[in-house]
Amino acid sequence: MVTLHRGESLKQDKNPDSPQEKLFRNYTRKYLDFAASISKARLKTILARGVLKDFPRSLPLDLRTQVKEVVVHANRIINDPSISRIELDTGGNEELANAVSRLFSIQALKGIDGSPAFGKILWSEELVMIITLLDAFMVDSMRTIIRAQPAILNSEKSIKISEVLATKSWDGLLSYLTNEEVDRFGSLSVEKQVKALEGKPLNLSLQINKADLDIVNEAESVRHIIIHNGGKVNQQFIERTGKTDIGEGEQYPLGSSFVAKSSVSSERIALKVFDAISKKFLAQKNPTKHLHPISDI
Image (cartoon, rainbow, N blue to C red; front, side):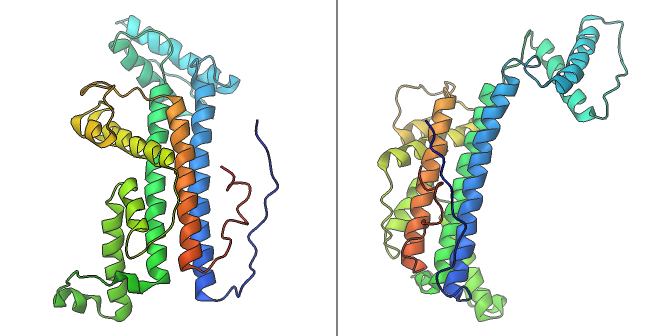
């Protein structure tokens, strides 16, 4: 069951021109951009699964007619060596015609007959996007903290005089140091980013559910093997996730349920981070009060 709520627009209870309030509004937009993108990725996967589940018969009528003609003629070329070229009226949709023709030609070369399976690629695409979006939001969060309190950049790290001089100004130096810290933070896994936010000197109380962090940790590991190993499990994946039910070299059994859980868990983590940072560094007593109903996840 889904409960719908009437949300409120963002209201300004404090001085809207103060640097802190401007920073909070900007950070809120960053969070909303993240949440909207996560929802778009989820919706795209759901709709695409419906449209592509019995391709091309499940397509809308106008597209189905175009695709059917391309498939028929593609099969003619594949099965009749005497035919080398067929001119088709694509109705201005040449991209669709070329993509469909190429897909069915490749399937024929692989000896595959019937409707192409799109599930795996849709789930893989969404999972990669989920982790990419969450990582980008975490980086935006660290940048927001530094803008609110630049003093957190104090550290034992040394910097060359030539690098200081190259920045030409205090603002330039601050920007340089900020980018250095943000790049370092962004290179961490989500799990380590959370630990960094909770540790010194930030000491944020995120109160993230361990189950959500475990799901996102596994999702991030799956993303790595999708990108770098064709979705096959390697030793690094086993060591990082502690999973022993999938052997090295086996294909990770990615399915819709895990992707859906990863989407929800990433939103929960991002909301916890947004709430904690807004309270501690942006002086907001109840930063999520205007985010209802999306905060109810």
